[in-house]
Amino acid sequence: MSIQQTRLDASWNLRGAMFMVLAMACFAVEDALLKKAASSVPVGQVLFSFGLIGLCVFSALALAAGERPFIRTMVSRVMITRSLFEIVGRLFFMLAIALTPLSTASAILQATPLVVIAGAAVFFGEKVGILRWLAVVLGFVGVLMILRPGADGFGILSLLAVIATLGFAGRDLATRAAPVSMSHRQLGVLGFTMLIVSGLIALPFGGPPVVPDLQSALSLVAGSLSGVVAYSSLTTAMRTGQVSAVTPFRYTRLVFAMIAGIVMFREQPDTWTLIGSVIVVGAGIAALSFSRRRAG
Image (cartoon, rainbow, N blue to C red; front, side, top):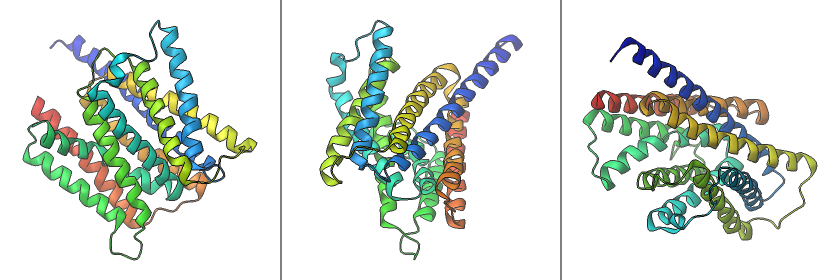
């Protein structure tokens, strides 16, 4: 490989990393604003409104690009499976950030790539070396440190984030089998449609729909738009740089989430949560590093 090509790859990787950091910052802002809205608006209504706004935006983007927002591929077996996992992930993570500290829910969510690695080995027969398996196990130890089952600080509601993590991991695994012909705009349409479905599922179990006050309405709209920017930036990041170089920057989401939790909700993550978060993030980065080394 020439020096010029190496510099070009480094430039694209840097650009991809910047888009990934932007995506994670916007995801953290989205989570914080939706959590704020959920303090006065039922969770189901928050999800439904979020999904509707995102659906309108991505449908408009698809039409502007000359694409049909909804296509037959969306009801294929693979995409239905992906959508079901998306519903589980979206619904339970929204419940998690509404009912538990934002920093705790976000920390647990960082284990998603580790669950994907384990799932790829079990369901797709992907070869996972001993070092990556050790990283996966270490990451799960970190999650247990955050949850602390059996300890006085254990909150049963923290399991909502665990279920969300399994849902998102299932979605990511199903995405591997998704047709490459679908654009990120069409995937956005499908994803936000599943948010609407998640909201409809949650509505009967919460309070009746309400007319949000100005602050809640602004939080809903701003959070939804942040989610759209986050999703678009994430897609751009993954298509700009090398996956192995860009993906580790996903973990910046936890940093942004903890800052948002402290600033907006006066959260104070305890020592166990901080140590567990470091372990989960470190294990994830190590697993990615071992994967790249194996590929090299």
